[in-house]
Amino acid sequence: MAHETRRAIETHHAPAAIGPYAQAIAVDEWIFLSGQIGLQPATGELVAGGIAAEAEQALANLAAVLRAAGAQLSDVVRTTLYLVDLRDFAVVNDIYGRVFSPPYPARVTIGVASLPRGARIEIDAIACRRRS
Image (cartoon, rainbow, N blue to C red; front, side, top):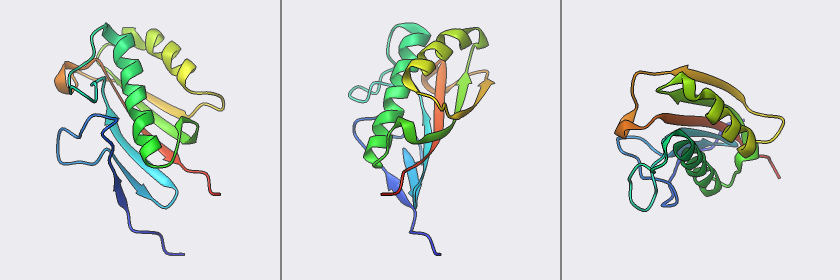
């Protein structure tokens, strides 16, 4: 069975890509989402309020891209969290646990030296849309 041509997913409800990449790429039922940081879509500025506000905004940005692809957070099967400070893990984990529902996606958390725009967190995801 041949698969559809891959297509870029773009929405103004999430920050525009800040480089040569798409917000997401969809191939058949699969959606591969680029990393999102806590940028406000309207201004392109990092949200104020620290790690909690950034994590909430990054997840809201992911949700907006998923909606543009015809999917939702419950379709996410894997995420990667990039944290500048692993001491923020408990705060992020609490927010993540409120946004996602069981069965939770598979997840990797990685400590990094820095992220674009001075962000403290970046989150990417892979989702699989349910077939009708």
